[in-house]
Amino acid sequence: MELEVKQINGQSAGRKVTLNKEIFGVEPNDHAIWLDVKSIQANQRQGTHKSKQRNEVSGTTKKLKRQKGTGGARAGSMKSPVFVGGGRVFGPQPRDYSFKLNKKVKRLARVSALSYKAQDNNITILENVNFSAPKTKEVVSLLKNLELTDKKVLLVTEQTNKNLFLSSRNLQRSKVVSASDINTYDILNAQNLVLTEGALPVIENILNK
Image (cartoon, rainbow, N blue to C red; front, side, top):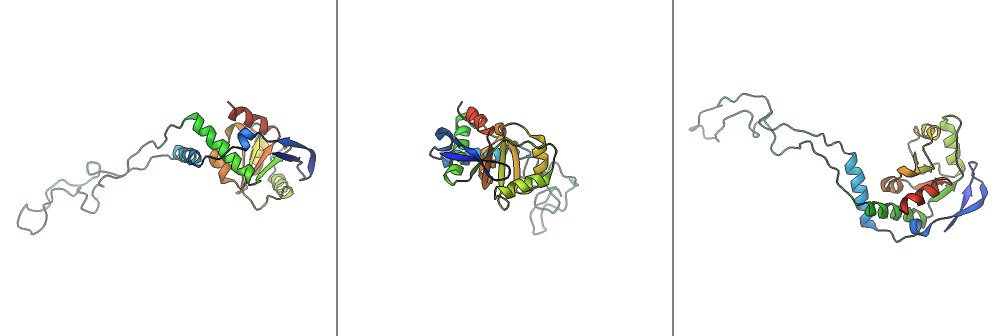
């Protein structure tokens, strides 16, 4: 699959690049995608939720009423879960939600996500971008020139580009990442994938290992 390279002004740069079939042209595996996205979201969970059990709440342990003759159930402590303010039964406790996923499954998931974008013609190749200073209006102008203003965009650069990152972080529908940091969730969460020329070899080198 060939795509023409576009300039910052939205015009053609007069050259084309060929996407690697082993990365952008495979049969997508939906189950691998599901596992990888689940893993990414699980790793982001803090897992700090906590409720107090009956041995952790403060309250009197004095027997509330006599054992028999009241017509009600026996009650020995205000900490009992049946009373308001008592402990909670089987409540949430701090835990680690992350789980291990094999490297080959992660690779298959990313390749599948990239292949979906290629099938839907939602990949744009952009010449390398280098802003001299952080300016949000330059990113807004770039997206306008590429006709991507009203779409959620993931812009992938060859390496960490601080000025470009700072220029785009105030834009709700755009995100900038380096080629070595792309993941399945970010790819699928974006409507359009904008890859710089320098990012392509990096992605191919990582996913061909």
